[in-house]
Length: 174
Figure 1 (cartoon, rainbow, N blue to C red):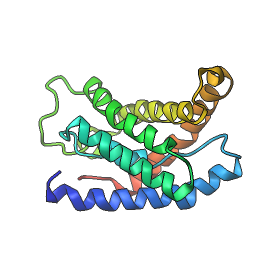
Figure 2 (cartoon, rainbow, N blue to C red):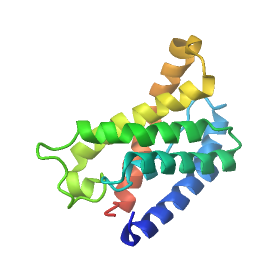
Figure 3 (cartoon, rainbow, N blue to C red):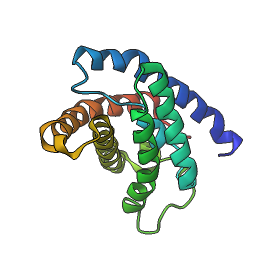
């Protein structure tokens, strides 16, 4: 990540972690943790497209670890963040345009690809992240149908409008 991308990503990191830990964690506590609105994965999604996968995994782990530290969870967000850093490359590759990414589009944002593409990518990305988050929370396949999948669906339905609103408000270009 060059210096042009560093400061916007640093502010995005700090802002999303604080919003997650202060505002959205309180909403999660009011539902006894049954559904969570997870906004901090936007930091991972808005990393530069050309960022190598190991760097995305490390940054995903760090943003998750920061959320874990501030919310008192033990490694669940760090595990989900690291997994999302890895899955991001696969998802972006799957949704790449015919010629691939030209390098003119620094981040996976509606500014460069349009809202339809962005919402498709964000929908899949957040579904994967939220599923992994709940899978790590329970850490056993025994709860797959009874808790993990219903909580994933409910949290995804609640998270996507927040992602849309946040992206619409801040409209990231870098």
